[in-house]
Image (cartoon, rainbow, N blue to C red; front, side, top):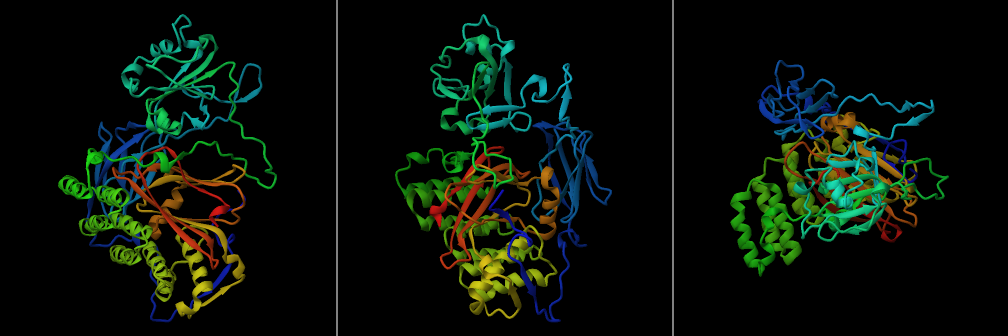
Length: 580
């Protein structure tokens, strides 16, 4: 896709770097994570193994290059001893093997395995013409088209009931009655009550129900397909109206069409188009946790803080409780004092957990509290001295504090430790930030190393985005949509990008960078689909957006997202020229 750039030495303006590294600097070897220390103790790793929501029995779980191994029980559960830096390998007949590198914080790994599939792109039918196979299991169409985009019924992580129109009882009183008896569990499982009614999506037109039955007259003989969507992951695209479930009906005479509108796209080679299937995170992604029950009736901030203290003993070991409460006091009562008091407890309660401390540092940076963020990043580098992310994060916050000389020193540590510039990952984030620091603040940083920029004009970009996630186990898909509705995706899953995730763990980083070179008139969208982190806790995503990157009027805005709901495509940002 034109104008969206995943950084690389061959994409961004070339920088030729010659470091005057003196003999007192000893190069650290790379991949420290996998060099297991002799004194590193064994620890228990446990979790479940499943595929498409079904727990798998007798999955082989072994520690590579050791004689330690086990199998999952009849509930899909396993427990095994391993050391930091070792690799767990999961194998099962008919499934793609998976390998996970153990880190300092690894305790729980809930694994989702994928079947080995022999893709048949074409099938031969009686008339000997080749056609694409458009049907899935039991004749259900693979693609369900809605007004909010397509749903791949074979790849989603939630159930959808399907009924072929040909199987309906044409003598039924109405469509509701006909489908109710085709799905016996329908009445029992879906929230069809007076308070939460389902809605009907009939050939792309939405109808609300009354008492669960009334719907526009429809000829049963004209029904082609019926889908019943019950899961939040599937109904969220319909907004709050879909809270009671969605019944999607496609008729034989319907003209619903999801094909992209023709546009001036000759300049673009990407043929993938946005399906308008993302849901606003701002509107629907922020759900109130269960421990806030009753807070709506609290009359004042004093009583609210008292209620928080009552809840604290029950939730003191759940880090998200502190962050949620801190946000609550800041947003509802504008109470910065109590909000910061709550955040300060995290620093003590989770002082040995770098993943939680990273969220705390993200929070401080978002609020512009850079000194507090600096204190936390210093703690993290002590816990993770071999993670290159630790040095970059310190350099970044030093730049926030206008301490450019210290920032430069942290960046050069990346190279002093034996690392090189690469076409992806943390090296490219450091690459672009050193470039900007050199061009903008060379004198203030007292830069002594020779740092040659071929063309300083190429330093500038309209938008620079840095994504950071607090846990390396997070799996997701980032989608960028340009004004012509073309998409570019960055897939961060073991299935699609295992080599990249392994590289992150070996180097010790969890971040990626993208540029939008020309933010022309029209909207750009940044969408994000979260697939989980193999644990029972949420992932926190920090998105730093730099407008007019490298220019005198450069500005920065930090966004922080708590990711919990899986398999929902969230729209995180909508960007346009007005931001510049």
